[in-house]
Amino acid sequence: MRVIGLMSGTSYDGIEAAAADLDLSGDTLRMRTLGRLSHPYPEQLRTRIAAALPPAPTTTEAICVLDTGIGQAFAEAGVRALAELCDGHADLLVSHGQTMHHWVEDGTVRGTLQLGQPAWIAEATGLAVVADLRSRDVAAGGQGAPLVALFDALLLGGLPGVPAALNLGGIANITVVAPDADPLAFDTGPANALLDAAARHFSGGTEHYDRDGRGAAAGQVNPALLRRLLDEPYYRLPSPKSTGKELFHTPYLLAALADAPTPDPQDVLATLTRLTAVTVADACRDHGVTRLVVSGGGARNPTLMRMIADELPDVDLSSSDDLGIASDAKEALAFALLGYLTVHGLPGTLRSGTGARHPSVLGSITPGRQPLRLPAPVSTAPNRLQIVAD
Image (cartoon, rainbow, N blue to C red; front, side, top):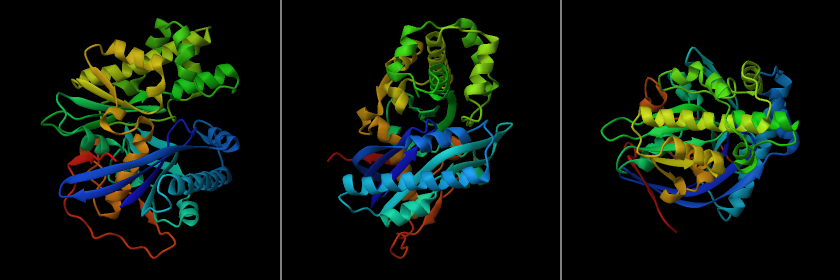
């Protein structure tokens, strides 16, 4: 089955599309990747998303406009992926949508909202669309995140030592695959969320991120600010746990700066980068990680990667590219895999990854142009992911 995955993370800079041929044989899921592309959001849409994100107040009109605008942008990305990656032929499209709110109270996720109306994608591509993949896990008592845990567990299974997968998006999440133990997954804290907020704040909105980590590289860590940031109670919560920009946003950063003034913006960027490195390293040490496989936009930040290496001198750092999965495509491919499991009647979650009462078949399906015909249900879930070279 040829599947397209579409993903936009908490940095909301655009949509990553990736395509793959997937085939399940026994307990082995074979994946032949077909490439990836990036589809940027129009600037006006990015501005609308930023204006509606917590802690900003919003309206149902703004949410309706965003649901349509994001859905249309995902449809454009799907049309491009169908033509450019799949030669015009695919069987299924899987859309993560754009997370706008992740509702957490006292460590319990009460709801999660991803916008991007899938009807626009189905109409534009003609393909059936699996969307809203997080809500079912939340309904089953889970965190709804990180949903890449199953993909990570299949990819890392069998590697020596205690491997872990780290994704550095707006939020950093980790999946630890220790031998003779259930995989464990959780959000470690901010990766780029506070860095992006600082870049926008100090530049007056002209910069959206610390390009190549250059600002952080030119600054010095402020120990007082770092201590203040590390006082965040989230870091001491047990896993499974998840978080988002409902917590780590510009007012959060400004409150920390009020308590620990740091006049030089480059010192703020250096301190925030060290915060991500420390919280990632703490998670790795807590679980005895010996190899860390990194993906996501933060993997392209050499200053962040250097700081993580400094914090974990005895851990082997590598990229998901080394395992055959392009770093920028990993989350889109993970959601393609989850959608594939959904249409085959297989669960896409791990209880140990999200804390749900049971694994769940994820998402809702929007039919394409043709009558909806699902594959025959499969009773054997995969326990291994094999990446097939072209």
